Image (tube, rainbow, N blue to C red):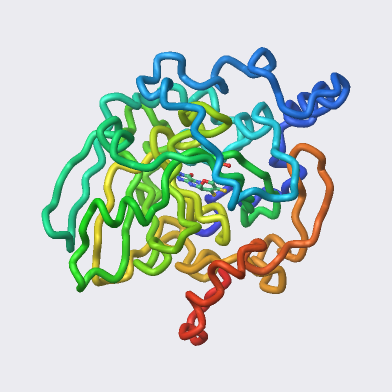
Length: 318
Ligand code: MTE
């Protein structure tokens, strides 16, 4: 049985949070700094200077997606990450710097008019880049607020030209055990896979992320391209995507394959549906440690509740 091997998510948050997060937070507060300046960032947390997309950022903010919460300081966000390819703990940011992000191709295949491979820089040229402030809620009951840059997933779906028979979008992370030591742990079903319905993918909130904090995406965030689905638990937001397939069959995602009873396909945020190890009624805000009530669909119900109106027999909330 696979059950008790998976340590990261099973740690109570108090144990999983590295001391340095608290230390750095105190430093920030003591300095009166709200947004961390680049000088405070560990080298690995800065946008890669050599990233060829650097000149594209910052991109204009889309004011339709702002929120009332303060932005989580970059220095906290970029040193507290889930990226199991580089370890099952939160301090993967240094290890993640080993990931080569150029050349980087994305394969588009399955039920599309024509399968194709596109380089990330070609894709960036063709997509309408903008910045959005999104909530980010992990099933471990912590949350952040992040200025993501990227483009609507709908633009990617239009670019891919799926056939009418396509019902799902399946996404896959890179597979490279030479640089990602986590991928040498064979009990995980690598590569990381996630999936959404076409309706979810074309909902205006679904966002392909290529930058954050006004810069190209740092490697620990899932460079050069990841997903953000702010109404779902964070594990749906797959990082470092290399393949996007359009399918008729519902894909089985990474965590669903590991423990389907705990991590379902839909994974929409619901304060009243606890995970076996984490109550979901409240969340801890990283950066302030404030505990606030969690809201259904992470506060995005107006955008997405309709997607699920006819799916009431499904296990929509985990
Ligand atoms: N994508 C890949 N490929 N590997 C991962 O381990 N972790 C997921 C998601 N995407 C993960 C991933 C989880 S559990 C969360 S909460 C978010 O990424 C974390 O994103 P962040 O590190 O930017 O906060």
